[in-house]
Length: 109
Image 1 (spheres, rainbow, N blue to C red):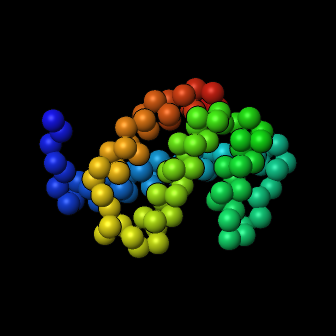
Image 2: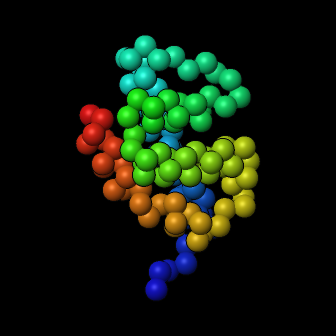
């Protein structure tokens, strides 16, 4: 059985997941830029980066789904819903992140 996280650990895990996705998004933006694909900063530009990356085969379908979940989470985290973080949901989001990032970086280095 997993040890229950403290409130501070839950907040830290939420911040870590937010930062992981932000880093992935920066890599994708850079790769899209090198392909002369510019994403205008509209209200859904974060989602558009991910969709364009999928169109350009920069991410697999599995990575797309996982990154989309992290993007949705990050939106909540950034816009002040961090106080509503649920440990169980954070653990679900965090569980595949190490392999996900390793595979992504291996294919996009």
